[in-house]
Length: 115
Length: 110
Image 1: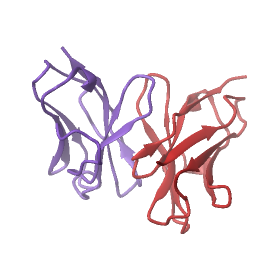
Image 2: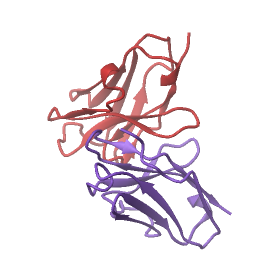
Image 3: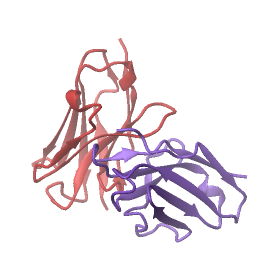
């Protein structure tokens, strides 16, 4: 059974870079049939897609976040990562990693942007 | 890329059927058969209920069904049960964004 688990700091200072990692077990991110991605949800609000990437190199970003976001795949550790630069309080949210058909999700991790 | 439009709330009594709409444009919902529906209970990660407009993942009850007409997709829940009370989100592939989510609908079982 596929499992995804987010990890990373729960508190990030404004203007700094948010970095999260998703560790995948029970399946390989090298499988080019699938994309892997990140979705976030501000407290009490709806879902927002951030980015998705595939082992073959195809990568897609939310146009509204593209200038600040990088997604990368580490096939040797079966992990994929999200970096988001120049964060502000508006980036405070639960961040989920998911297989990008959205059939498997991590439990989510709350990231708060505050000094 | 604007979010797809969903009603803020829909309610129904146990056993009834309800339908949630998801309105987009010809550049997303109307242009592709890549609409999915997600269920999210409070404090939990979303769960995929429908993909590719009408397909149900293994293990999802056949009380959930999807459809699409023009630029609007719909999720119908028949035989409403207490555990169906949750937030529901549609999402679609789009020309200007690879994925766009809907605004979300809170389903209340009366």
